Length: 184
Image 1 (cartoon, rainbow, N blue to C red):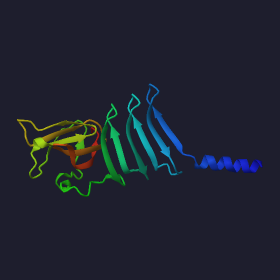
Image 2 (image 1 turned 180 degrees about the vertical axis):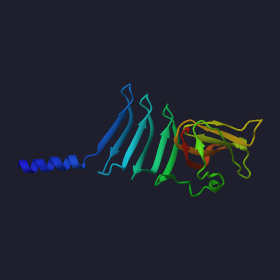
Image 3 (image 1 turned 30 degrees about the vertical axis):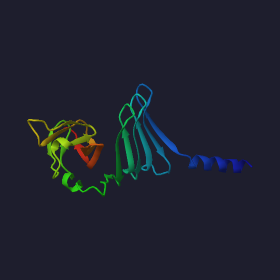
Image 4 (image 1 turned 60 degrees about the vertical axis):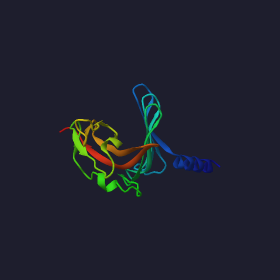
């Protein structure tokens, strides 16, 4: 009987989800990882703002972002949704503009502004916008109607989206994940 109890306890412990939790100095949860297998490079990750609001959620598979990820503003409003495939943002297949605005592997560096000119036939620059994570964006103005100026604020993965302002809302024309290098 004791042997059966040990086997049941071992089975329950071995099959249960394992968690890693990182906390803010204030005591609130900053990051939570839920491992559903023994492979520690595959897990569900949730990050939180200091106020406790969910900041982002998504899966890592073998150390790479994979599947749908979502992010929110600190007030709880949805900010972005991105689909990853093996660590790379998967562009929407129905998007005809993607090749026009895809960056490839440009050198972006923390604190160094970069001018970006986006041209899509039939779309005025004033109808477009850029949404990024971890970067400051200056939009075209009367003095400069061609260039967006992007100044990354943090090293790592920067999500970049070009949006089009339509009458009934915003449409994402394309998105990319850009590696930002630290200050040398």
